[in-house]
Length: 100
Image (cartoon, rainbow, N blue to C red; front, side, top):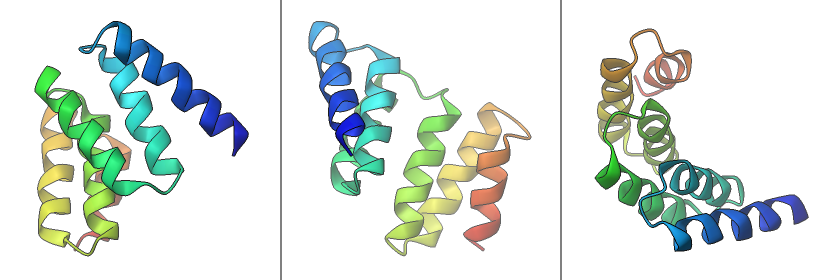
């Protein structure tokens, strides 16, 4: 748990220095998700999508958050978008199978 807090601190610094830092935003969103803070993770992931819509990991993360919240329709859309940007991307294929 301490490692996640430390990771969050570093990702926040990266994003503060450069708000459009896509790796920093993705890392921060994943860190929030691992800390079981899905609302924070979703907000940061959506912010990252404003920088680039072509990162399949972001779509998978948003799909995972939607799936856990019980929104299978949104989850399917997110996983399908991930597969559009990277066909055959296993995490998206796995998520899509879980959302059916």
